[in-house]
Amino acid sequence: MLSTDTRTVFDEDLNLFRDQVRKFYARALIPNLDRWEEEGVVDRGFWLAAGEAGLLCPQVPEAYGGLGADYRYNTVIGEELSYAGSSAGITLQSDIVVDYIINYGSEEQKQRWLPGMVSGQVITAIAMTEPGAGSDLQGVRTTAVRDGNHYVVNGSKTYITNGQSADLIVVVAKTDPTQGSKGISLILVEGDRSGFKRGRNLDKIGQNSADTSELFFEDVRVPITNCLGEEGKGFSYLMNQLPQERLQIAIAGQAGAQRAFDEAVKFTKERKAFRQTVFDFQNTRFTLADLKAKLQAGWAHLDWCIARHLQKKLTAAEASAAKLFHTELQWEVCDASLQLHGGAGYMNDYPIARLWRDARVQRIYGGTSEIMKEVVARSI
Image 1 (cartoon, one colour):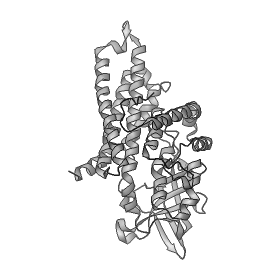
Image 2 (cartoon, rainbow, N blue to C red):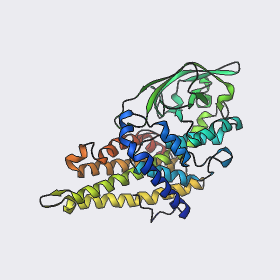
Image 3 (cartoon, rainbow, N blue to C red):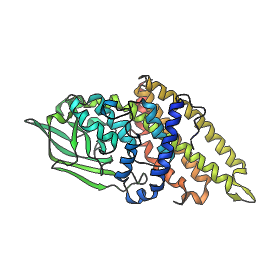
Image 4 (cartoon, rainbow, N blue to C red):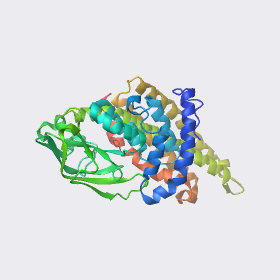
């Protein structure tokens, strides 16, 4: 269980909320983890249960069915999800997609989509990455060309979380390819539109329960009113929202690292070798001590980032530094913790195996560690 005794950004209300989240995950999430890993998707029943429990999009204003809560509630949901060892796509919906609609959507779009996103009846995805464009979003080739009062969307996307399940996709497309970043717009595409097709559920190294898909758009017609915000402002919207996206990944990284560490402590104190526990060896204790020190610093830094974000002061460089630090720490802790398990760590019977596999992509999506270093370096 995550310890919050020394945390600085939470109060008693948040602690009570965390207790509710833990109880919900214990009942509705953890018993299903293995099945979802095998099936490659989290079933809709979980989404609906999460919505009923108030765990989806808590920041949505009450007028649209949400709690009207601040980002600390998202933090609790994300921390506990990662600590539980789940890659369910609810944080993508709650921490990333929904704020595009809250911040840039028309009143009609908000009325249509936000209540369903809160209840779990609507599952969403955001389609940025393409076969030839990853961290460099200016390189997207998907187009949305005006034809009367419609856009005609053509192109393909890949590595899209919630791709198999999504009822609504926020598509990053070029409405004017001649204008570079100023020609990028965000287009809402419903999952039942003619010409929209889902490819296979991609076979990944880890995060197997997070359905990740190829998406194809072939002359998909959507009304002009499906443009999210202003035409041509899509790139600036993406840049505005990236700090929160990268903070969310950092939060998951820190919580995942803590879970891996806790698993290592538990295993080494129980496992015997040469008539003593593995924990009794100096190498084990020194390795764990080193990791504990880094985790301690990580939690303090994370709380600083969350506080900055609540004040709307967290910069792109700071958020990028947070993603870089916490995801690299997650990988270090997961890898060391697996090593301390010995051969057992390579067995899927032990939680550390899944934690290790799932951690690897954290240093890639949302901007690779190398891109994070570039962003931070530009701020120096």
